[in-house]
Image (cartoon, rainbow, N blue to C red; front, side):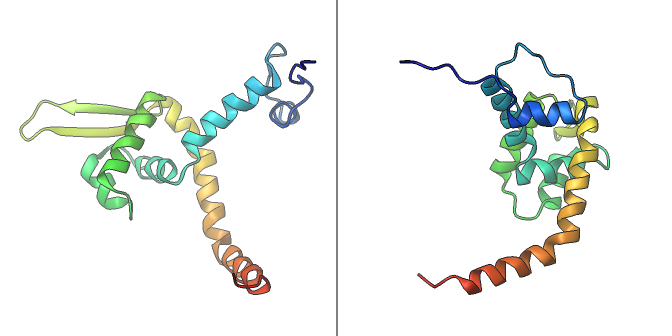
Length: 145
């Protein structure tokens, strides 16, 4: 016997409705969840958040981003910028000068993502110490092994 996935109210649809976000009733629960997860995978990873934060101050050159984001490799920055550009969150402008110059900037869509991203960064900064203390207490209760 085969079963079809439930299209009852999944967490994504429930959250959307609770916050007044219109949801296509024909959209299957699994599809809605998959779409949200796909977007969150991109905009919620640590490098994307930091890149978007850097670009919130205006256009930046690749090297400015590379030096401004502690710990990111050139390859990882390139991959993330390419994905953010693909998603329409970042624009890439090549200037025909010698040596070549490339600027990255937030698009209109990228600008709409700034308030929640910056709120998340602000929350993380405000609660880092508490989270670290909670982790230490949790780890101290667990047997080594």
